Length: 204
Image (cartoon, rainbow, N blue to C red):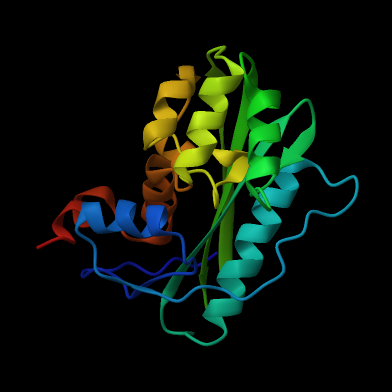
């Protein structure tokens, strides 16, 4: 695949309305637009988790790239998996509490598919992180649910917020659990033609 080399930062678009992803890119100092992708985020029956994460990330990026062909679009999709079961965003706080009960004192996997799309070209990768929750009481789980922090989060918690107090250990990329593995994104951007040194200069 022919790779374009940038002397200046590319026109970046984040195909996600996630405040966490937006803030992570903003903290890097990069200039980018936010255009959430309006796509159905459904995992197919029997679909492998890593395949699903990559497919959904690319679907999001392609949906926005069709409207922004001159820009490099970043798509991402994060899945939480426990014993082969997908835990999405809770529909309500009753379901949020149920998810936390399932995760309580156990390990789960967080997968984020990340896709870059520019015009008709694309590349996709997936990041995998293992998270172990400490075991806490039912009243503690309910108290966390009552904060509302996990209402719109996969698995019903936010590791970067008060949900950090539920976590006993983590193996892998912390930012992956937030929804955007920055190290993996940097590698993909370098392969695409925007090298690491230029990524640092992109904030100037």
